[in-house]
Image 1 (cartoon, helix red, strand yellow):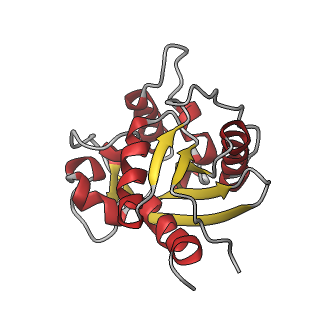
Image 2 (cartoon, helix red, strand yellow; image 1 turned 45 degrees about the vertical axis):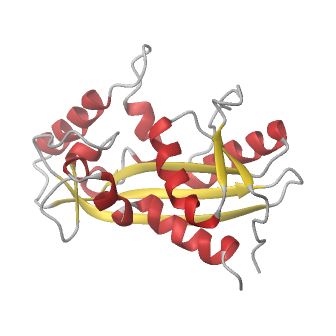
Length: 205
């Protein structure tokens, strides 16, 4: 049986404002307040694992120990089938420039590699999300979610963040970046993982 989250306030183990908005919106119905690690002045620990779950655990346990509050972390990325699952856990790394993250560069790299391979269409991919809730006593719970779809080109849409402009979810003809937040949110890998978290930690068993 999973541990229930009874505390009213948690830390999001991230400095990403886009993720904070999404997670807070998901937590609102349960009366939970979410503050980011950045707002608390916490550093970002080095992510040394090669799985989403491993890196999610590193971030959540670090934030829980540093803050004394339950911490929720999110490790996510896009896995492109024709690229053997790349960039996967290294999605953010593909956007690193030394002067911040450039996701236009990362999206262009993915499409160029697909073109170089003459990959068959549709160029299927999935967004992956692993959520980890860690408590200051060292206990944690893990929940994984996916959003299946395909990589498209050219980039389309001004909403969202990361790879949203080139990701078209299954059953839709628009990219995540062409959808309003309230349209996109139920379809995301994060929402899929969060539904499992709710069933395990927030709803009465």
